[in-house]
Length: 204
Ligand code: URA
Image (cartoon, rainbow, N blue to C red):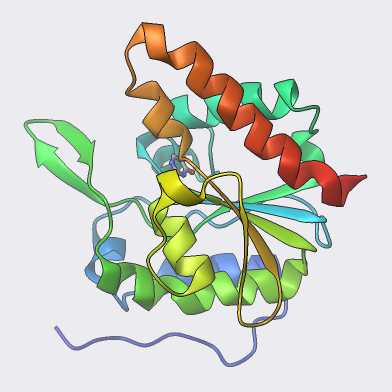
């Protein structure tokens, strides 16, 4: 199939962004997903959190971070004293990528090419929201936001700077915490909360 480019030169609103990403077939993921999932929150939120891509629940419901990773994120935000309504929550990639195993759709990480194809939608979103700072949740988001590979474990809790001067706090993806053994989870959760607290200085 030919690559269909639907990127509009001017995206004026989050609704336009949602509609344009719905039609996007610049990479193969969109063909198989239920719908696109774009970021949510208020325009000019001081802080924008960026994950990897919508998961199974997000794909079905059309909203970012509403499944298990989202519930963990909500708990961590609450523990960090951050109101989810005060931040903008999005993803580096706007469609759910999965592999079918029987009837089940198993999450598959987007390739670097797929992330790169989706990059301009993320940049449109940042331009619309105009956050004062960003949080990269995991390696895919970090690469998308900073423009190069970031060793997340080494850089977590640190601010990196984008070419446009926007600062990006690096932290783990909440799904990484869900994969830990029970005995490791508590300390990892506390460290994640500390990272989010660091980012919350822009909310003061
Ligand atoms: N994981 C993500 O990276 N984003 C979501 O929206 C849900 C799960």
